[in-house]
Image 1: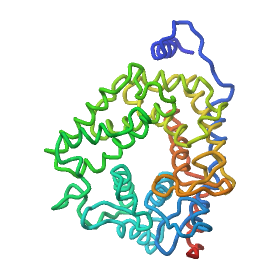
Image 2: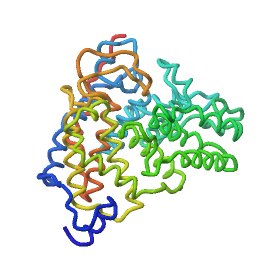
Image 3: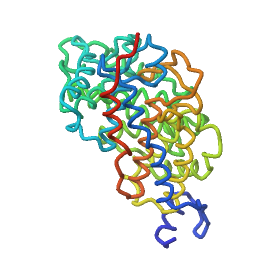
Image 4: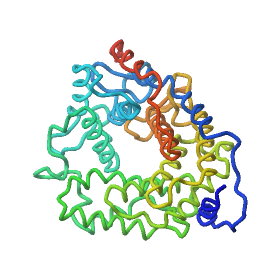
Length: 400
């Protein structure tokens, strides 16, 4: 290892100079090739989740074919279209009538009174500020990918805003923040904070800026000395909470404190060889969030990261992603299990066989993206993109 990189590694991890760090035997390029091979069936699998009646996508195959009382959902539909366009699908290559069906799916789900988006099959989404914030962001992103916009004013621009009670005053926001489950799951708490980004962006700057600062300061007061949040909680929960807060910081141009300490914690997890244990298998978000956190740290720390670290990260990511690969061509959210969880709601049921899940798949597609970004390699398009449109064109409405 070059002397400058050895010094960088030592400073980041608090190692004495001359201490040896581990390495994995496989090269970055070999593991990237292995990783890519896991995604070959992905476009066709996503196309088979399409519902031509609504223009949206189901969260998994079981919901389309068996649990037919459930419909497609905003989160799954937006994730499918984002995965494909990020993976190399040119929206202009989608026939015009099909593009319009995609667009109408989201536009028809906007409430003209509130500006929020929700699914008619899942009215419980309207009771959660976290879910409403997520669906607002998903819908805007999907519409913009296909050159469209919401039909009605967004929440903070409504003449009589609804669903924004926690932004009536600084005291109301303080109470909302204190009610979050900080001691139970800092991941859930900071996910709720991050989900407010899109709602806050719709508020007038005069009020928005004060609320952003209040949320930022409140979260910073809870940061632990090691750079993460949620001391005493599982490390994967802590890393996931930290990456959520990093997105909040990035979107509002605020610094993420102690990036060097956070880097040490992330690399300590990778060095523990997480692919050899079972805890990461409980949620595809865990390997996805860890590498996405490294991606957020790039703006704070010298680049590129040390070669040994990158080799380890890519190798461990490949081995973890492989564990989530499902027989139908997608990736599970939980290894070996499949749930009914549209719009990231609490589980509404479980299937008896493993199958791919759009949310789990989205996390692991992002893991692939960051493997290429962090190592400075050009990312190839997803394999067999044409299988997506072929499956969509052959799709028949499910029997409901």
